[in-house]
Length: 180
Picture (tube, rainbow, N blue to C red):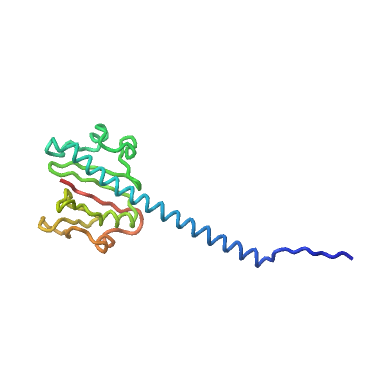
């Protein structure tokens, strides 16, 4: 007669351990994803601020922005190298564009997720009681400073509630900043 003193794990114990490990893995992946998304949002905030300053510096002597085309800015080296991909300007989430005007220029960031859209919409552009920002258009909603022509627009600065209303779910939001 043989006696067996083997001790193994029951199926219930194995399932319990695997469940705990699964919850931990999912929690860690959500945390990493959230941190990466926050990093990309902060990166986009830095990119829009940098672009605005660089374009203003480049064209201040000209007195107008007519030649501030995307192609010219890339050719002149005004656009940071990490944002240039061939003949395209890329931000951390997708593609960017620049539209020159006479006294203003517009920077357009597309493919923005909702959280990034809200954070970019509520950015403060006021420095020492003044701003080069003329207007912001989030998807179809346009915002201008009080006193400016308010044809179907709301006023700046944008609150979190206003930005949340303007930004759609998903990653297909577009923001246009018009600067002078």
